[in-house]
Image (tube, rainbow, N blue to C red):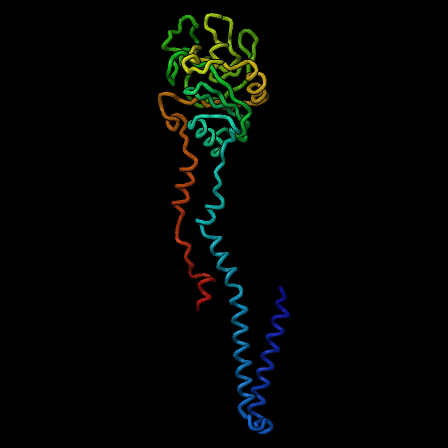
Length: 296
């Protein structure tokens, strides 16, 4: 804090040491019966000066050691690698939904856009803000048949020509945007090529009981559509539509016949952090730098 003052005190101490040395050598008689006293005092002061000088240097050792420890790659990795996760609030969700949502946020796969996760196995939709905070969730109606692929050219065919086994909701990552269908109703286009969209539940065919199916706890009841994703009207108007208004977004439809990693190229956030930390993990030994030099 005060280097000039420290240097001045050291100089004064050195001068006093020289004074006693000179006194001992040039004027031995005045110091009766104790001719060795000045020399002893001089030696003591000299030793004290050396010790004080060494202590001043040693006082910085703890800071140097801490600095060296903090600069170690393993320590920096532990401090810097804070995994990002999606916030589901108190909403119940499957492990796969949580895993994919965490991966989306941690990897920024959504590229700063809002996103939705369609969990086909649980027949549930989750809508998130761009930063991974949950906007809302709801049950959903899905394609009649299990499967993660669409039949080629199905988007150009009439509904009446699509066989039951072809009525699947394809899995994958889709850039989605709001638009209007032929009737002028707003929908969220998920995959235009295969004519897959997410929209308000269609109740025109009373025999299908789609509204009742949405409220049912049975997952089998949720498989009824030609492939589109039907959600409750209020959920669409209050959560889904506002989230995608004025911007594109990403819809992740989870697979049911393949792994999510195979479809999305995703990873478990904990695995990434663990493997990176392990690769950089090394003993925090002192090197040949300033801290090691203190032992010389």
